[in-house]
Length: 181
Image (cartoon, rainbow, N blue to C red; front, side, top):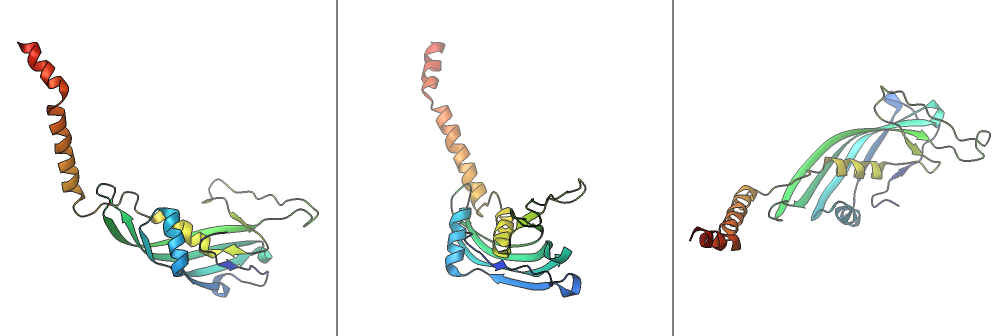
């Protein structure tokens, strides 16, 4: 089970376009703590999403479109100091119902995806679509990969000087001096 699960049951009568279902989810404190651990964050102070779920083909396929917002704190890749970020990102996920054995003649339904389409649809079962997990995955993709604190450049430069000093005082420097004599 996902750290941030929000299952939405997909019914054949649900619609698309102006008839789409409005979706609004927000992670609670325990869910944010679990997601922070999952993504290696120091903290996740806010995570929410608003969007809509459209259902097509008599409940056999769906499309989730949403806008996610989050406030995260990550460790700096240079100094390990906390780096706060506000993230906003839009995403869309296509879904298709996963057929179980015994349904519709006992065979699994094959899904054909044309090469010019975005991505293969995600499967969903009779339990529904986990909107919370879709939001969590969007967060994971939107996180800054290399967060840097404001003083990271100066810390990096001083680290470079320390390495240069060590190279100058290497044990081979003494051998080089003996070689010249």
